[in-house]
Image (cartoon, rainbow, N blue to C red; front, side, top):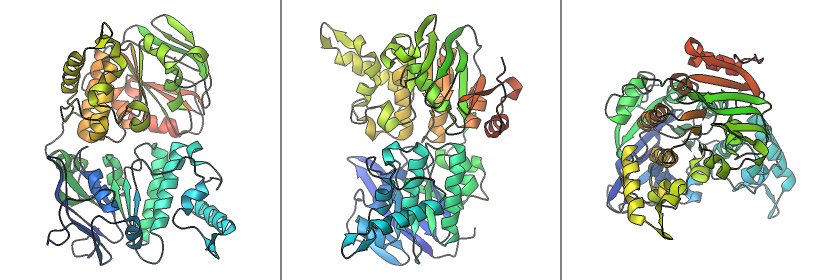
Length: 517
């Protein structure tokens, strides 16, 4: 789109923020025109989330109100100094969907959509009108939920869609608004992402705009009009997406060209290490497969088909039936627990870093040594100096920034958190490493590091099993990919068959076909 001469619908300027001596944003700005989907891009730690939090009033910027360079946000000609409160954001028609979605898990769908916009009559909530509004809103967006459904019992896709719909409703009305989405698709499979994109295009058609934070450059090319790139807290450029290649975007994000995103060498596959037999759970039935030493095996499918559940069953994180065998030691799944799985040489990284993979309040060193803590006990005491030394070495080995083992995990960017969590499990020297969506919410530079670490683990003899909906990553990383459909093995791709198009076709095919032997 040609936006050179258009008056911005949203203008944010003089955005500066430091934490102690560490600058996070330096005179950053953002100009969004009416009726566009605008990408905000940058490496993990480049300042994207800080910029969003400043706009939302969650944190205060550096700088005063009286100066000419005071931080401000202007929407449709109405200007406010930062920080702003929620009521001001609502008046400006600014809506936000944050990374954590901001949902109360114990609330109902009706309560979630009603928050801040309850239908009232004579000073009391009109629950009949509220239910009618909720049902009509859910129907309008094609979300088949009951108004009484509890948010905590919804799937990840349903929670993400509910949060997005709530954000859209906050800017609805005759006046144009701006919806800010901070990585809304990070934990969504490809089919759900397309559903989100259709909603974003509907917003754009009304003249309102979307600020879209993502690390997935294919999504940028698919749905965005322009992109603003942050690097080390500063805006380096704003470009038209249609005239930019993916390589152009990567170079702008990193400040240099990226070569060889995926490892160039595969390990040779040798003897079997993991054998899963007739695994069944809440979403799967009679799934059997073998993974070998030095092999990277992919498990994939569509959301709800059950591929995500399999690695949880193998590790004992989910309950089910069947058998799991590692290097000759076999356990009935119903008796398998994570502690037993670890003693058998298994490691498991769930998709959700914030709640399942690491302790955000604990230090980097504490997270790194959590699975190997016994190594540092000496006569009933912790060898803290040895733990600290090993933590620094592990952080250096995976390219962690900053190299500060005493900082809490929450202070690191998403990509560095993921590298640290992977390093923690690699320190256990596992026979089998299970990874669920390992590159969710990480930038392209961190992706390359993670891929290299995964490949190196396989070269060192580990059997790596990746459950992911990132078909292109699986096609480049894996020796084999098993497709799960309707809870059962639908097929297996390997060799020349193992391409992104072939995986996509097999996942979307309407009927299952037998797996190859």
